[in-house]
Amino acid sequence: MAYIGRQPQYGAYEKQSLTADSSTTTFALNYTVGSSSSIFVSVAGVPQEPEVAYNIINGGSQIQFTAAPTSGDTIFVIFLGVALDVATLGTGAITSLTELAEQRADDDVFLVYDTSAGQIKKIQASNVASDLDINATTELAETPASADEFIIYDATAAANRKVTYANIVPTLTYTSGTATGDGSTTAFSIDSGRSVNDVLVYVNGFNLVPTTDYTISGTTLTFTTAPASGAEIAYRYLPLSGTATYTNDTATGDGSTTGFTIDSGRTVEDVIVTVNGVTLVPTDDYSISGTTLTFVTAPTSSAEISIRYLRLT
Image 1 (spheres, rainbow, N blue to C red):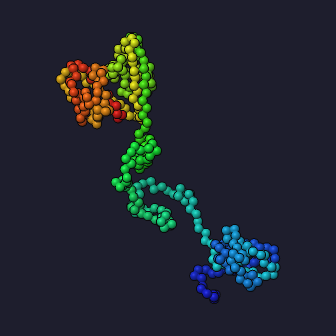
Image 2 (image 1 turned 120 degrees about the vertical axis):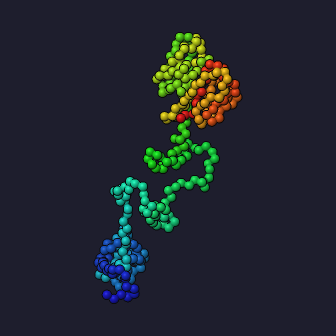
Image 3 (image 1 turned 120 degrees about the horizontal axis):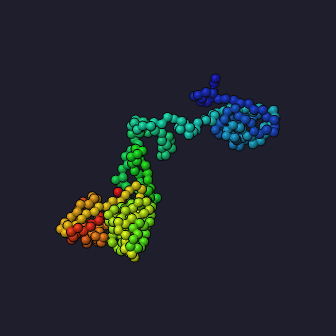
């Protein structure tokens, strides 16, 4: 077939004839087109100007004339190009695929949308950063807000996860209670969920030794010896978090020893030390270096030494 002008590289131009009746302005097209310039329209041998004499409507499936062609006029349409239907990738195309369920290989390929090029491209897994480099990141240099997030490695899931600061450093709540001794009662009600290690007990200002001077079972605190009549009893509940617990140690003075072994990683700020129930002053009365607590003055012979560790473990 001969062509005036450039011959199409693929396929052939298609022709469609239309029948005029002097009233109809809209006609269905045999092919969907992308624009009014994608067709050549002739009415009674006169070429029609796109978007002046006619327009394309309904997604390119119909032609609409500005004025109804006269009955008997010869009308034909030459399709210079048709619209290309591009499939839309539905979610099922992804969700129905078999999961890799293993560590990706370096030569595996991902599909990404390159925003700088405005195109979908492929990228090898080896080119996807797997290590988080924070060396060049500006330091926050202040206490994080509760909604701030950290990236951590979840050993249980073997994957990087994010966690909010509020879940790393929970809000600690301190509470207390009081009672009065009557010289005979040894059992007193306290808050539930407590143990001897996370309750500080004072009688007339003296700090008692856990287990030695009192025990706890359920919501009952039991003194070894009933507090005297009128004695002021104070309970200080240390804050709890998850499954972490408090611990304590005891020792006995001999009148000469000043150094005693304690748990590692402690400072004078997170240890309460009492001698015979009297709470000592950090730094003034004792110091801590490594796993050694050193008294300024050696506790007397048989003195009851109690060491309460305030940091949860």
